[in-house]
Amino acid sequence: MTLQPSFVMALFVSLFIIFLFPSSNCAQGPPSPGYYPSSRIGSMGFNQGFRNLWGPQHQRIDQGTLDLWLDRNSGSGFKSLSPYSSGYFGAAIKLHPGYTAGVITSFYLSNSEDHPGNHDEIDIEFLGTTQNKPYTLQTNVYIRGSGDGNIIGREMKFRLWFDPTRNFHNYAILWNPSEIIFFVDDVPIRRYPRKSDATFPLRPMYVYGSIWDASSWATENGKYKVDYQYQPFVGRYNNFKIAGCKANSAALCRPSTGSPYGSSGLSRQQYDAMGWVQRNYKIYDYCQDSKRDHRLTPEC
Image 1: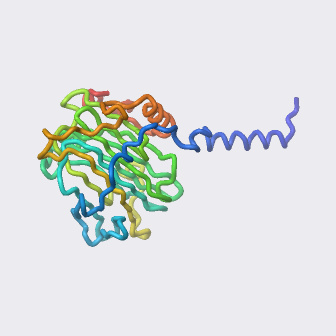
Image 2: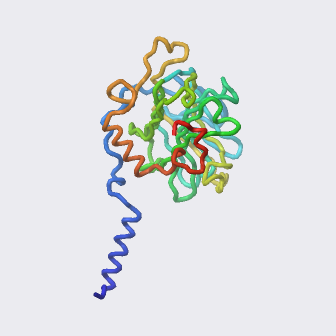
Image 3: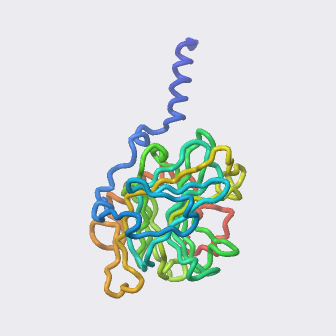
């Protein structure tokens, strides 16, 4: 049978479209998680819960939105007024468009100032990118110095199902004595359960945000650096949410949970939504990296 040129061309175009858009479901976004923890927590102004930590000349508040920016002189960062022993911590963030290679925009928990060289940390980091390539959202957990010196990261990386430079989207970390859950617009994308005290952060932490130059590793393992001809690089934050147990009142405080049942874990609908994200948008999982020494990450 001889194929007509018009048929061959139509087949090629169809295959090309399938390659670019492998699933129509992906374009529609994740299934509903059925539960929206951010809706149960009121927003706070920046000055109600946070203060500048560094780079004050590269930070401003305009109509309730905090802008941080990086140029060749400095980046900037902020810190919560109080440390927490558990809680839900969130912010709406809008990222800088265009060439942002080497730039890290972050929202995270840490006790590095209280335990230098032996600290804990829970990260949401947006890894900058080159023109016309998507951002990578990196989640990470460090325990008792695994982020100091000989670094042992517990990274899970994702693309996003939307353009994070066009609008604000809500990103959150839920941390309680049983688990850590990372949320994007109330969709859980990763759950890190407590399997042992040795592999779980238990000491109080502050909440931080920052924008800084991480040219040595941020974009394709340092292949692409910050190019300051595109400065300033601006990260925008608003809709701050904290529902946490402060370190000095932990005994009187009930830890936050991420499920509708008020217990650890997630609902079936939440697990379904998380599974969709991980099947379609997860691009790296440290537990699946054959180059890693998993004796150092026994939770895998």
